[in-house]
Image (cartoon, rainbow, N blue to C red; front, side, top):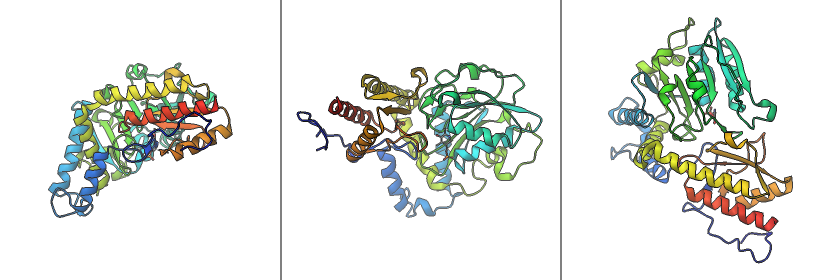
Length: 377
Ligand SMILES: *Cc1c(COP(=O)(O)O)cnc(C)c1O
C-alpha cells in the first residue's frame, strides 16, 4: 500500500511489470528482455562455441558474422542507399561532437549549428576548435522549451548540424523539411531518437548516435556517413579519427567494443522481427499520446515544452511545487518506476519512452499520475 493517501482511494494497483520494475531511464536505458537473455547466455557460451563472447577475437568468423549482421540490419531498417556507410565507433556521441567537424570543417569554412539544448551547445563548443561556426538559431531564451522556426541556412555553409531529439529538454524536430531542402550537407545527432520514427535517412549526410538509448549497450556509437561529404578538407587526421579509414576497415580498424556491438546486433534483430521502424513508430506514437494526454488532463502536472515540439522519446513535465515534486518522486520509487527525475540541471520529471519500453509501462505511469492527482485533489 502507498502511504499518504486519502481514504477510499485504492492505490494498491498491480503497478509493477514482469521484471518488477518500470524503467524510464534516459540512457543507458531499457532494452528488450530477450536481448538481455540472449546476451547473458553469450557471456557464458557464445553460439555453442564453448567460448564467451568476451573472449573471442574480433577478427574471428564468429564476431565478423555479428558485426556484418548488425551493419546489414541497420542498413535494411534505415533503408540506406549505396552512398551511405554504417560504422560502429568508440567514444560515444560526445566524440562525434569533435570528430564530425574534424572531418568536415576547416578554417576556410563555416558550419551552421542549431542551439536547442545541452547537446547542441556541446557540439557547437567542439566545432569551434576546427573552423567557423554560425549558430543559426537558439531556443536558449526560453530555457530550450521550444524549437526555433526562423533561421537561414546559407548555401555557403559547410554543413548544417541539428540535434534531432533533445534528450534533456524533451524537444524533437518533427518537420525536417527545412533541413532536407537547405542545399547543404545535413548532419544530425540522433542519439535519442534514431530508429524510433520513419524519416528519410538518406537525406542526411552524416548521422551519429550513442547506442545506449535506442540501439543497444553503452560503449559504442553508430555513425551513418555518406561518402560524398568526406575528403573535402585539407587537414591531415589521426588514423582513428578519419572516417575513411573506418569505412575501409569495415569498423575493424582496431579492437571494437565487441560485446556492445553484439548487444546492438541483438536489438536490431529484435526490431526487425517486430516489423521494423514503421511498427515501432506506431507504438511510440501511442505511448507519447497517452503520456502527454495525461499530463494535459491533470492540473497538478504541466508539460514544459511547446506542444508542437514535444519529444515522443522524452516527456518532460513539472508539478506545482517542490514538496509535491518530492512526494511524487518518492511514490515513483516506491512503485518501482525508475529514472523519472529530470536531468540534474533541469529538475522536474522526465519519462523516457524509447523503442523497448512497452506501452504497459506508460499505462502504469499514467495510472500512477492519475491516482496521485486524485489524492492531491
Ligand atoms: C546521451 C546523448 C549524448 C551523449 O552521448 P554519450 O554517448 O554519453 O557521449 C549526446 N547527444 C544526445 C542527443 C544524447 O541524448
